[in-house]
Length: 133
Image 1 (cartoon, rainbow, N blue to C red):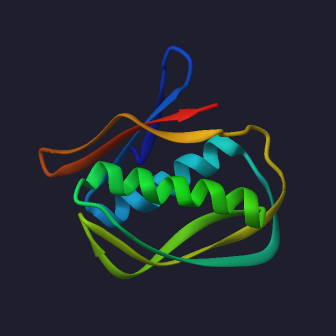
Image 2: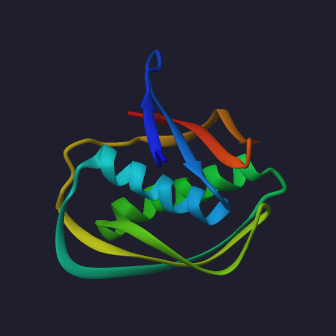
Image 3: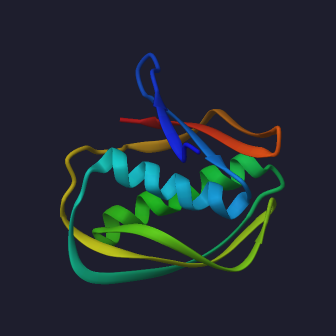
C-alpha cells in the first residue's frame, strides 16, 4: 500500500496521503514532508508537544502540519513519529519526536487550507493538501 504520493499543481505542490486510520494519516504526512525536504539529519533528538482541536478533520490536519512546519524551522528538526495522548478526528494531542538537521534541500513556505480534503474510500483514509513552495 502506498503511504503518500506527490501530485502536480499549478504553482505549488499537492500531496495525497493514505492510511488505514487517522494515526497512520498523521505518520504518513510526516513521512511525505520528510521526503519532500530531503534533510541531512543528525543523531541529536528533538521533541515537541502539540494539543490541537478543530471540528473539521481536514483543517485539524492542516493545523497540525502547519505547527510541524513552524517547529521544523524553529527547532531545526524533522519530526518523524507521533505518540498520541489523545487522538480523534477533532483532536490531536501528543508528542512529536524527531532529529535535528544540518540542511534541507527544499523549503516549504506554508501548508495551505486551499483544497484540503480528508475522506474515506473503501476503508482507506485519504488526505490531500497543498504546500506553498
